[in-house]
Each structure stands twice: as C-alpha cells, then as structure tokens.
Image (cartoon, rainbow, N blue to C red; front, top):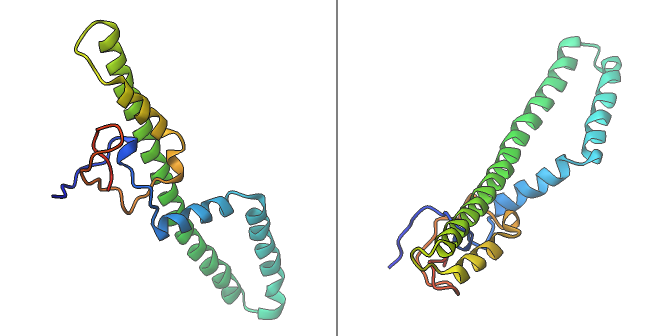
Length: 153
C-alpha cells in the first residue's frame, strides 16, 4: 500500500531529480556566471548599432524588448525552480536538526527514550540534500529505511 504524505525529513527526499529540475539547476549555474553576463552585454552591444541597418526606431526597440522579455520570463521560471528546491532542502535540514535536538534534549533530561541513532542518520542524510532535491517527485511513499524510519521508495 502506497500512502502519499508531505516530505518533511531528508530520508524522505527522492534521490531522483526530474528532467526539468536538472535543466533548471544547470540554467541557474550558467546564469550566475560572469560569462552569461558578458553574453548579455554583447547582445546589447550588437543590438545598439543595428539601428543603422534597420533604420526604423520602432522595429529596433521591438527587437530588444521582445528578446529581453522572453529571456526574462524564462529565467524567472528557471530561477524560481532552483530557489524552491533550495528552500525545500534547507527546510528538510532544519527539520532533521530540530528532531535530533528534541530527541537529544529528551535523552539528556532523562525523558522518554529516543532513537538517537536514527537522528544521526537523518542528519547525515541532510548533508548535500540540495543536490538531489526535486520539485517534481518528492511525494514520499512509506517504506522502511535503513534506520527503521519511513523512507522514499
């Protein structure tokens, strides 16, 4: 039986990253480099003297407005995807830290016995989580993990 629930802990994150997520991650890496900025500057430098060839200010402005609008629209979608994945990874890491600290505090204060080993594995799973976080396939299905907790299938 597969039951869908919200992913809250690192071990519940699917190791598989969707095609769009991989593309968005790559686009984010490219757009954050100096070479991409240089390309944008070069595009403006090539566009500016094109007024001599086009001789029509309206067409000249329409070209740059259309191109920049399309690029901006696509980049916003791609960068938002990357930001969402990053935010999700941070949240899962914070969940693992909070769970581990709560169990440690209960253990230190002689409260209810907790599984600190599970918390250690959860914190280890959180390391590097941002590299395999996906926005397309993180609905966790119940399955025993290596530490006895629920895991992604």
